[in-house]
Image 1: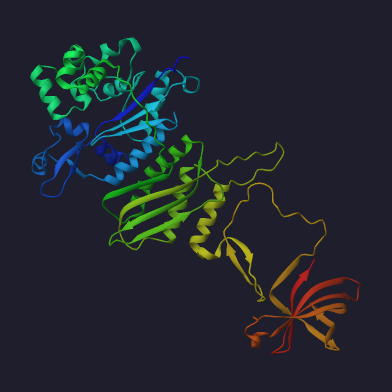
Image 2: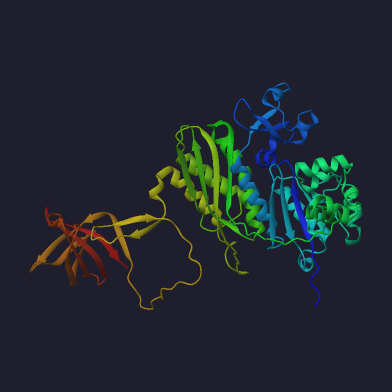
Length: 504
């Protein structure tokens, strides 16, 4: 039984601290930017972008040396931003294979993907590498992709010098030839090993692969054998996959406090692009969006918007955020923005050929948000009855769209509907044996045929003094034979009768 063929794709992102900070700052991509690490005054450059490198800036420079250059953009290293970006890249790689292995480095990210057997899904390795690189670039990260049947060969080529093409495929029969020109720095040597190879005049992987194996083992032990196998592209690897969590989170720390709503929405717009892009990659939509604003002084301001249906319409989300923040503005200037989205299934609407056109759910959400901003948060929604005997006791609840069939069985028995009169109309009533027998309503005389009641309302069980109103349900007939079904209320304190509602 032959072992299955191995095939690996390595995703390598250089200057990862700088790329993590610039991912949501496209306006700084054309400017020289450096990332400083350490505490003042011993700060030094740990990462920089290509524009800064072309101006003469280099890694390891101190803050004093950086200040001698003309107007470089100085950023502070953020561990939280790097961790969040790393998880986003691992999540992106997980869309191509469930077997992912991460190799953390100080200023770079190396992610290996086991793509053996994925040809039927994504096509040949060249096409998969192009799709992976395109997906990574859409996330705002510049990277390289190398493919080989040897794990370490793909990793060494990815860490090698930059070439014109960001995608490199290593044929199985040409591994040693392609790796021969790479410097020894791609092997992550120790200081002693680096000094030893420098004394021997070994500077490339080709020089190392040409050394005799027995003599190399005699001088360096088993490490020498391992390094020579790496240089030849023959060293085996035990793949240790990881499973990154899937969370739709984006966070950005602002360079300066923001107070204007337009500036806040401009930043949120870029963050929404990334959230929607990641949700679409998994064929999902956004069900709710929570924005957390870190305010000047240490406080935070959190708001959540939830439309009727999950959607990936960015303009709808931005409009809902705008209306919600207008109705509930933050109390201070904003230092950082965090967005968290809950994933949901994409909504599908299928209309019949002759069915009338229905209004879009997104338009209803925007309309409700506008009304909510005018009349108040608790005055928009659907009426929900409360467990109370008080008149018109209800509260406003949020609209919700039920998925699937309702579990409540529809009753086939016809029921009367009530039309409440607001305000109640005065009715003159004649009693007989304590029950209404005749009443006048809207200039017509009615004779009561059936009277049901009374029910004492307008009170609570713990305050009996508030029981001051009686309710009667009456079936009456006028002189011309027309029937009237109504609900009448009697104020016991003032002995006044009023018509409260009519039954249809």
